[in-house]
Length: 97
Image (tube, rainbow, N blue to C red; front, side):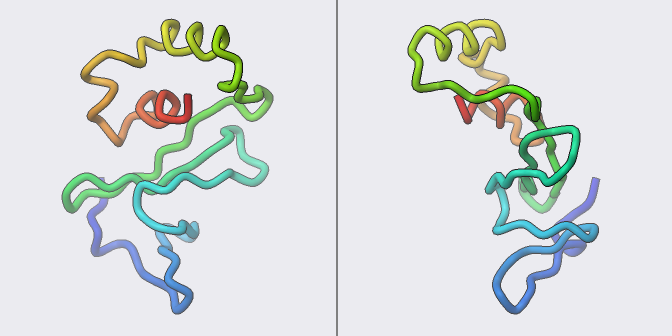
């Protein structure tokens, strides 16, 4: 796992880590042409990690109460351990829903 010394800030204020650009720590962005829908540069203390999550072929339809309820139940989004680990893809997926 890397630490914050591996991350550089550009003149425009964006963060660069391993050749990828991010708007900031813990801020999701859409991936381009990847096999996942979103990516985020997660930071916990001094540690950082790129977390990729989401099926690029599925739409997020959280505006539908029934679909939102089903997704959150299926992925157990209300569990305590899912609410804390920012290095887990499930954390970010549940946060979107």
